[in-house]
Length: 159
Image 1 (cartoon, helix red, strand yellow):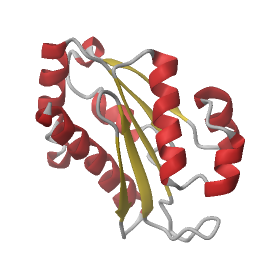
Image 2 (cartoon, one colour):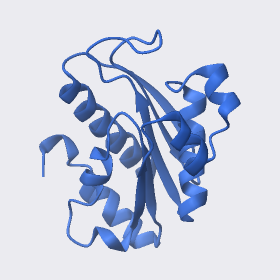
Image 3 (tube, helix red, strand yellow):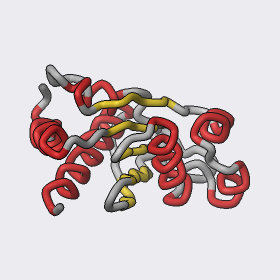
């Protein structure tokens, strides 16, 4: 397990103890968050599944993100990240959901700078956070995964 994903053990211990579950909806991380969350033995006890919704059409059709929301705010926005998390949580009947959307780079996309990322967590407590990252695509994607895991672990520990 990579050092930056060390919060995973805490996440799974807490979720197991509480009988809760997690699912994810990813865009820029392309399945990397799901990969990290399933890296521990026994993760199937709490991990329900994931959707990698890279294109807007998939965000709308599978995650029920309204097309109007995407048109108004853009795919890289707090609003779309929150809608993605909510859609996945409902679809998979999960206690918690995490979503990621952003621009991995190397250049901007639709006027949004590379490294601009939104992470949303939906559950008994909901939170969104914006990350402004720099580096290669791999660095941005890995930092997003690490940030999402760390934020979720912090939330779980406060309950």
